[in-house]
Length: 500
Image (cartoon, rainbow, N blue to C red; front, side, top):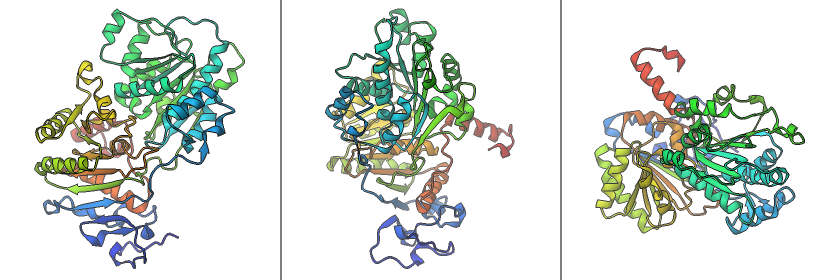
């Protein structure tokens, strides 16, 4: 039973339970909160005392608070793989067991697979690390195995499924998962990455392709030039859909998606000769105006939603620490923490907001005796290729990066995320935290946040508020480009503040 208490009382003034299980502990113990004292989520933002309330003051430096885990970890639910054996090819089931060592399916997988198999347009919106990639790949591969048998010969470079991603590392990762999942079948996968598109146009490869995985920019260029054909495509997946629907991609994406026949319900056309294309949207954060963004592409009423109850919530199984400090103190704090964690065999991802800071972190750690590899979106492709894989394979235990590595990447090795630069946008915080504590990970995982700038504190306060109320994280809008543009316009006085 949840006990409510007056907002006039501080947590330390409430009688504590005989067995105390902390939810939040702070440098100032009067702000400590215990699980039996979680407040009603409807309480107003300003009515709850926060440890971070005074962090705008210069004397607050050195303060901290911790959000403690409330569960042990994300485990597969009690859905055995055999529960889908009537719908899924035996080779796929074998590959799940042999290649991925998966015995049980997650809730999001069990709910998504039948909807995609049936041909519905599907939105999969769920917390990071819960198995969304397999949730759409298993049924798509099954549908292609069924469809391919009935098809006449296709022209070369005419895939049946196209999976689009915002980044090269994610495209590479997904293509590797597809290859493992289609082992001992006759399906062929092709990964197309950005960075050498001109070379691919000059010397294109032509081959049989069933499943195409590519970055958004490279794919649109190569399809527009006719190197890859889309007239046979039955399935289009937008992986990390929130990023692809950001203003930086939106115009290209709209033009591209209009090329596909997204019928109202593609399952209605199973017995006809017409080709229907199924749209699948996948992400851990979703903009509130998603349906508005798709109005010119598809009848949004036909999209079946598979939404996790944990979407836009803090990870309940990962300890998160927030430290208020001077910006000049961050490097020393970082190297001390990194060395301590490496002694405990915990691989680390250090996030920075910009490339120069990521470069600095990598150089500083290496000069301090820590083997660290750097990854950011400004690198040339020939330099960037293989960097993430070096971390994944254990060749190096510290990865310094920007948000290029925050979305979608399956970083099961990582045990600790350090936000050297704290993200200003809530969606970035969710995705960064999601690099650890992924499904099947049983070891404890940690997030450490360095808070130095005034612009970061409001985000911290909203995170702390959500932790104290058990509510949703607010302002989870992934359209970062639009947010920045609006802020600039607001500062210039070109738009009415009421529009925000």
